Length: 206
Figure (cartoon, rainbow, N blue to C red):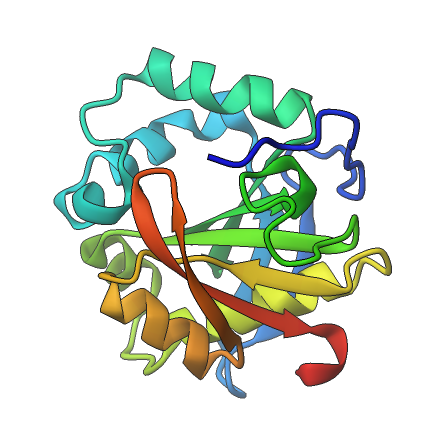
């Protein structure tokens, strides 16, 4: 595994407990998509439920975690500026979890000429029943809308030049989602616990 850059610290995300950083109407519909930061203590039960749901077992890798272990995993990373958590919400109800991290503080550091302006993301959609409870009608391509909204939200920060995704190559749905949302495939590379397909999108490629 590649060493992270211990001397680099990211502080682009403002401190906030539940402030919506981004909002948009879903394809002219009455439904609103918003992105807010996760308030870890307040939202921990939702994270715990999603991480332990069968749909997340294969590729999220946190099945069987307790509330305590989940908090102890995320809190030090958030406080160190290594990671930030966001909820994508439809009409205020969470439908997806987004992890955003500075690439220089990840195992990707040094692999592809990354800089302090590169940020990576992980996306976990809510269990289907919770999405249906939030959305009162079928919305085709909700996960694509969420991922594009995440791009817009991150690129609203002037210091973010490129966004990176590195799904497991076996996660065909995640790889297709990245491509549908405009990410370019860069290369396949070994990471801890998986062989990943590296995708990237720059500010001027949207």
